Image 1 (tube, rainbow over the protein chains, first blue to last red):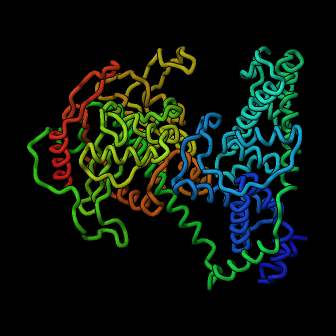
Image 2 (cartoon, rainbow over the protein chains, first blue to last red; image 1 turned 180 degrees about the vertical axis):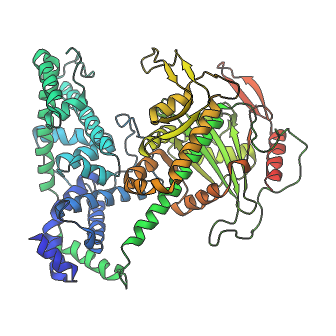
Image 3 (cartoon, rainbow over the protein chains, first blue to last red; image 1 turned 45 degrees about the vertical axis):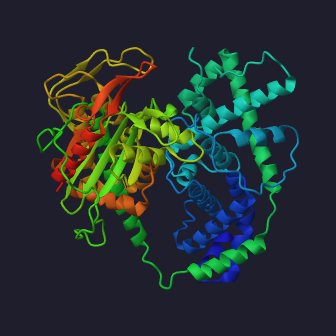
Length: 198
Length: 418
């Protein structure tokens, strides 16, 4: 169905373009929110992504990926642009090899974050995820929420495929450590060891 | 199989992304190893928890599709180009920028790495500079004729900080170099700044030059790059316009990304005690003749401390590698291949460099670098001529800068550059 709409949008049909937008806006905004953790920024990045997508609609190749996937890659890229602009406009370097050691994103927490109602495991997982280093966190979100393949992730994150894979691995490792610590605190178990897995 | 399954293999196992042989090997290990089974269960559980958590979070995000569409539609009307842009133009531009940036990164990373290990004052085309009496010359020349239409006319000074994989965690820069490029004369100098140079840092006590970047990164009010720029400008009494941090590791990754390099090895290399990652030895043997190196071997070639023949030392070998990369990325027959790899190369560059240069500044510098031949780059080091050794109370050997000598050297370099 999107394919018909795309064909129409390419001829300048605004109604078709709006339909495409409405169809894909929820997934795009949700992904942007997870990546940026700020609703206003997420809305801005989503708008940027749609503007880009419509302006480059002729480049979308249905043979290669679903439109929703193509859009997710664009959304991720816009989110990264936005973060880069927020970080004094400098190209980021650092976390080449030590994705696990990378410092916390220094961007001040731009309001507003959505007041979420989460309980139990989900509350714990979401809080822990926020503490995972940014690049690994992004990778986990693209993998487990975006459902992107590693090569699509590599495209979205502008990194080699193996880097995308290792960011997911690092992300899992960081998350496991955080969750284990959380479990220890909850149990009040003093001698709890939160060391590495074998 | 006694070896534990590593995290990457475990994830690949869960995601069914393994060859049958590997899969079977892992399965047999898992049967025998309760610890790895626990890790496997934990991985599967975390992945499942993550999926449901993210889905639930997603569903709670408030949506405003109509308002969002209005904004998008407004921008589309405003931003839509009047005539369609030929689709190949952006790609060509991208490729041009990319190849230029590869040159810059390769050139700069290699240059600084070379200088980092050559302690004495080095010159290529000109005799060794000796401190002379100060010559009156202003380091900030006025407007100059434009050799490249629309390109840089004024001289550019760029402070380059090199950081190695091992020291990246501590943000300790292994090498510092001031690069000065003058388009008018097509001459340049590269001044190596010892990392032990003891400099005054605004807002701090004296620190080693190699530690300035890390200090700035810890500070709330400034950044590593900005602080290094400020402190080195003051120490040299010379305006530093731009600053860039380059990860040596990216140079090696780059070599892999361009498919390796060909290097003419003049003498066989035998280094039985080349260190491996675990504190042991991993003997290095490279026969003489033209060799094809991948990134890892290139790094070993550059790092081995053996000197099989006079002049065939680390600095020489590192220079060879830089030239080999330069040759490789400028070979017309390989360009299509490089273009196909553009996204990967791009990310290596972006990940390996941090700079205050805008893209257009970087292109300007790239054009300058590529227009100046190695013979025209005067190289010098602050180490011997302009510093005095001292031991700090903490027992650390540092080099105290001597402002008079530094001034004389800077003047001499600027004179030479004209």
